[in-house]
Length: 139
Image (cartoon, rainbow, N blue to C red; front, top):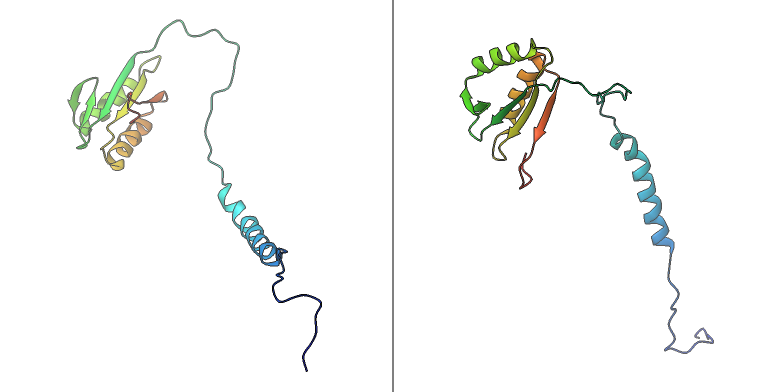
């Protein structure tokens, strides 16, 4: 005994089954809800406050520090040892107004070399620091 249906053998059900799609979307929604607080951590940056004061009349000195790929450091174009660099930074921090530091890092330099120079500048008390990038986009 067979079951009779009104459909012929060649007819197919062409409607889309959306249950698996809804299941996947709910799982993704739960994953995003769980991971979103982890991804939104804040980085504190000290930004200058806007004032209506006129710009300073005395233009501060500019010091160019270049970090080479092998870890050597150049202060305004001349090679310096780490001890000499610390003394130069100490002298520069005592000037009024403080000079601006323009830091240029070779793209092949290790992160440790750049971090050591940044640490020395920060520890020395210099406040005005800028990164210089060349035309090719390397820092």
